[in-house]
Length: 413
Image (cartoon, rainbow, N blue to C red; front, side, top):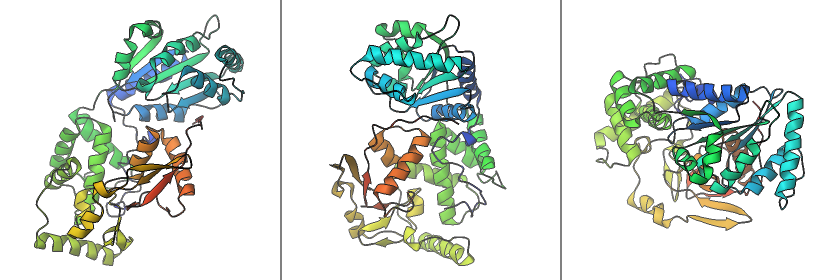
């Protein structure tokens, strides 16, 4: 929405883990190197941990992108909360085998033969498990058995566990001592420093093709970096909102005052309503931009009609360009929204104020790999023909999320 206004080729602060925008801080660099080295020399077990939003999945995606399909078979597990029998059955399917879910010994034998065959072709098999802190202890205990598949010199299966700090606590469980001892490499992704946070913002602007990487004033950078506490995902959310809000105000640069306003909006802190003079100025600025041809937008993005409202994609400040009447606000109060229901094996969600399609996907399906999100968006659009652009959803709109839990995904990048 704001790309043309700020002369950007791409959106710089989307929250999906895009390896094209990977900013290599010292700890991110070490984590990526740990995966590459561990897999290349067939170390067996590698763990990567870090706080929510620190960039673990982006690091995994960067590794997947550079993996040559001719040399690596990468199997990505995006839902680790499964029993061991289900995990082994899914792995067998990745090799085109027909598993016997009730016969785990037979499946493990089949898997061993498949791994040995890949090894004979000089192809490395890598099992990447994201959000590994959600894997049941019983499954982790038996995962050690898969790590025992080896020749006299090398491991047949390389396993990368990525997760939140809780994963480290989980591995301290006495019953997982044998698994912990098999870990060859461990890396921890730390929050960005203040200097790295500012560099991260400028780097992403540059990658997005910004002619002016100084869109954010120095004071604004300092404020946003401090608020984000070094978490890249939080930086993305704040900066994305800042650009959208600046666009709504017609501001070519993000200053300290606007940065503070965005922080209040994101945190849900109420502030006095727009005064008439300010509201008129903002509305006039937007109208002027439209007349000038800088914006080619559906007017319904800013206007409310009956019970349906074009979903604000960004901050509340941008959405407050025109205020709603009390009746319209009451029409979409959260307590009047149906939370969810079941239909045909899928989930139904009613869009509430502040929802985005990505938020709803995570709510229905759990944490997802970016490639899986692309797949899910396609399936959701198939199930909801009225949705043409997933970024524009309506408050009060009913969305059907199809049941895809039995599908697996193999990623080669």
